[in-house]
Amino acid sequence: MKKIFLLITVLAIAVGLYEQSKAHPNVIILAGTIAVLMYGLMKLSAKVPSKHSETEEEHDAER
Image (cartoon, rainbow, N blue to C red; front, side, top):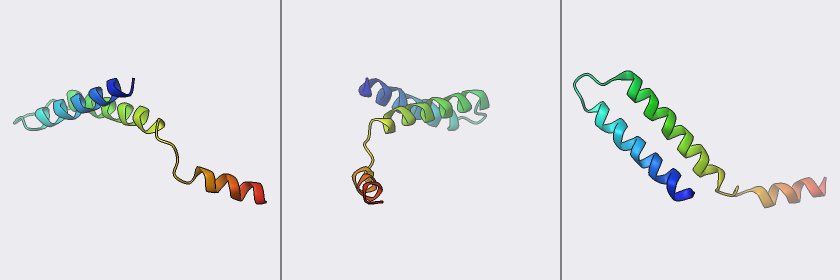
């Protein structure tokens, strides 16, 4: 599943850059690619564990 979201994110970047390079880029396509990019990044970042999750739990237990 992670590979699918990575592929979708990279494709959104490619389409957005291609559309931006045109003389008159379509704003709707650019907005759509930004939305797809943000959704893909949100799904990918949800899989990454927090760096400080253990230290926050230790501090909460001490209180």
